[in-house]
Image (cartoon, rainbow, N blue to C red):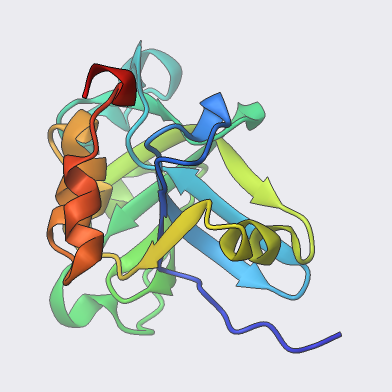
Length: 190
């Protein structure tokens, strides 16, 4: 098997050609990507469920909207926390309850006391479920043109209007990819 170049920490932005309803206009933050497969969370699928109703103590640490996000179609009964630790603290400093994924972005241990992480986090999102791909599956989807791979920014995790994230991420790209942001929601109305 050929070696897989890691896309951990990057964004997968659904192309308009992607027809799977789970990923229509999705922006996925890849939390892990290697020869064994890939795992990520959809950043722009808020649910109506308040974080505080399912994870007491964590609601005050989440940004607006303070709701649980549907991270993907796999294991919807499992919760993942993704948080941003700003500045120098984001290094390999060993913050208890936080594991660096890429840059300032990391996974939050939701079993840890929330007050332990409160002083360290600049933003937090809670996800129910995740998106997963088996070995080579994501690479096949990339070859088929289902996803655009772009750099993530810490603010992507806590975008206050997640419904706009797909267009915002595409708009900040260079060249023709920025033009995809203007693709109509319903091409038949064009």
